[in-house]
Length: 276
Image (cartoon, rainbow, N blue to C red; front, side, top):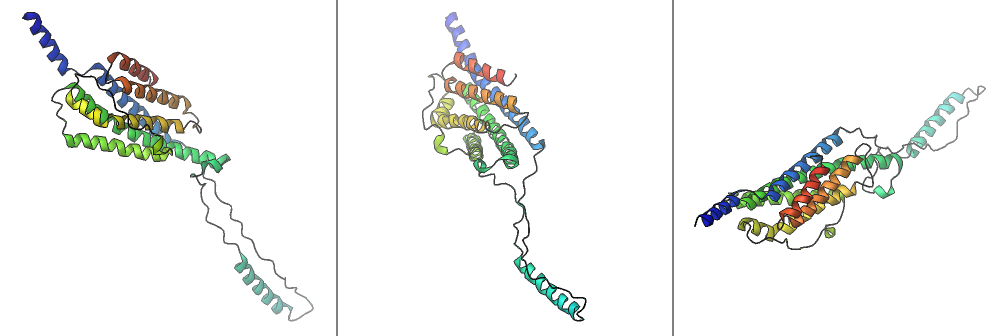
């Protein structure tokens, strides 16, 4: 009986301890969000090139010039009338110059030179800012999932879990729009495999919503990839590290529900990419 009792105690203790993969995964997603926050803060203080302005050059209509004759006593009056008429015609003929406007950053493919440089800087800042906010929402959601996977009585109200989930999806939709790639580019529904024997609440969450969480990692990866064509000077190495980190986290998510060994290896690679 004693060996059986010992095994029962070990099993009970294991039920109260978070699986190593879930703890490490949650901590690394939080660290990834922190690294993105640093990049977003850098982008806010980065000096932007001045926005290119449209040239506004008035075009005056040409008209007959009044000739003033020193021999004509009425020449001054005639000249004055001619100048007044000419000025009036000129004012009517001035081309209405458009107000100076920045480059059309919605059409990056049409831009070159300073205009492209300016729009690339603006877009970089916007995408990184939204990527950080999305990653922060993901980190909060993943932390809740970690608790679901760790305890029988996770104690997370269903309403709170739904709030975290919806906040992640909303932030992901904003990021996808800013990164400008279509929704149909995301992986379609594919169930997340869950190992039998895990906590029921975790299994239910992954079975119902895990495929959407998988999409959130893809949105992060696609958003960072979208910045690759127009890298900001001084950010290249850091952005490469972030892209590797999210790639490893995506891979870890695919196996974290079934295997400590595989997930922990991928998580370790993500941490290494983040310099942890």
